[in-house]
Image 1 (tube, rainbow, N blue to C red):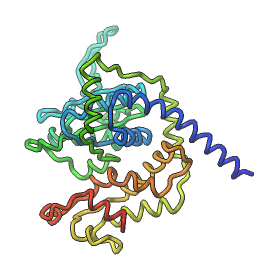
Image 2 (cartoon, rainbow, N blue to C red):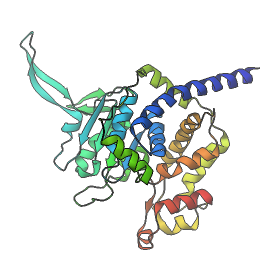
Image 3 (cartoon, rainbow, N blue to C red):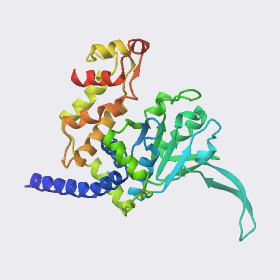
Image 4 (cartoon, rainbow, N blue to C red):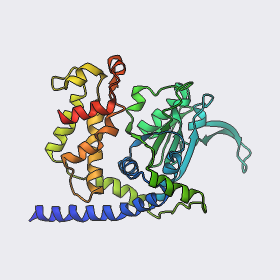
Length: 331
């Protein structure tokens, strides 16, 4: 009897979750044309409280996607344009000598930087020096920043979505592996089809596109996040996630020949953790109360592509990360 009640409760939670998220989905698709898979991946990151790295050529609406996501959830949004002269204090904030208007007493006051938002867009993050890039690391990992010896917490939800341009690499600073690992997904944005591009042109050359606002309260969103965390995961799904991460490591006995030949470093435990967490979110987005192995396969590429480091032989043989992940999944 108890198991029947638990099943009914789980089914009701999944239906409620899907109903609320579908409204957000529709708002995103009203603004963004032809990027349904990318939008779903961004939703998975947002709903699990994870960070995302967007990679795509200029003009593919990366900034618009992030702004639309913030508007759809009614979040505070800030955009940081990363440049070579950007300083860490330009992100976190700084202390400034100020005078209290009522008492006239001078004291050091903390002025918050743009990182104090619910959704932070780190635009072209690889254009800033490593010292500045690392200023985001504490915020992404610990959900707080430390300035002048004092720790300042960041309000939940807190997400960083960074963008990279894959074309221009001169004068850039590639993100270190430790920081890349903080992103749940590396999401690649491709060109639209002919019909989709025509729709984009018609939309953007007429009246300005208005981004519809959601009234989903903060507490309601955090409840959605807790719903995902509470989703039960079958052992077969966990085993598959762990096995996929292990197969990506060249020193593993279960690694396929392609991994042994072309991989310098494989995915760590955070890779398998994110596979399971993303599979939970995807299951609920599909209206199911528990993830299945197909969910793991569906999220594997964006979760693993930035966690697997190819060696020089892979570069010489023109062997790409997509082919490698495919060989790991089909072994």
